[in-house]
Image (tube, rainbow over all chains, first blue to last red; front, top):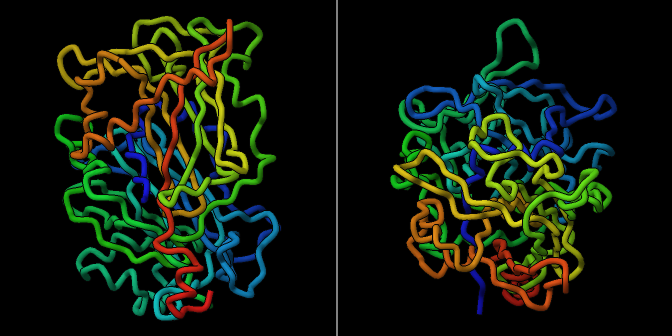
Length: 189
Length: 241
């Protein structure tokens, strides 16, 4: 006999009371190896209005493509001081901002490598369960062969790819459009 | 690399749809495109690991975080975190937050005309033990009005956030109290098709964990997604684990 997963409920508007102690907007300290990246954007609702009571969580591999988790059995080094976890709230203008290192490639189905990506959970008032999405990088040839990107129609795939900000190497813009035109691709994961 | 099994998808009807019109805030925030089914990869079957040291032992007693004692009815909220296969989820982080006894959150955006309590912040966290158990001491939260519809009041509830062993097992939920007369009117509680699923969000009065002369006990067990099949089973089916 099996139990059923507890029903999800919204974080509501006041989650910062419970979540602030674990905010992590800089995922990688100075000693962590890898290319530094800075990702900024906004969460917007179906009317294009900013979502000031939203929060995203990041989960990512290190620059070698290794997760700091016991079920990652790859013979690759973990990075001391790098957990791969981030928790980033939006401000009154719906903006979020975090810095990290670009992850390496990790295995996907059929032993093929996935393109570098960050896994993202989105929580806001109004969402009864979290939304799951991913952030990919625009300058990656491996995006073409990434299995998750190829699950998505070409017309919507772009919502999963951050945009390089002109003149600022390593700085990217990536937005979460919850609903409507340009709606971000969300996964059932 | 060996293939590690993914996590189960939730049983139909037990989880909310994103768009739930009675909950007005979902109207402009719920995605309208269908979710894209994503097979679980190493990304989803791993997830943040928090060392037990991260948890402040004082954080599990919300009645002793200030110089004085908070107003309201002291309660003990405890239970177990299990997966769908009834296995305890050990050493996982449980976070809670809630309103005070008067139904007011310590948050700048909460404008409800009820008093703040200088001795109550309303947040806590704890790690589950080797049997998946957690325990909080807190104050029974008050009900409060909200703007969803005319004369809308939220039933008393405590917010829970859990990580579990993987990105795929992340869960945020709310615990309610038995006998609360507001529950039948609450659109957030009524977000699932499956009545039994939503009723599992209601804690049970817990005599065994009631502390004499001190605090009533409430029990709230939480189930996180479990593995599709165990490595042992996978081995039997001819896969190397």
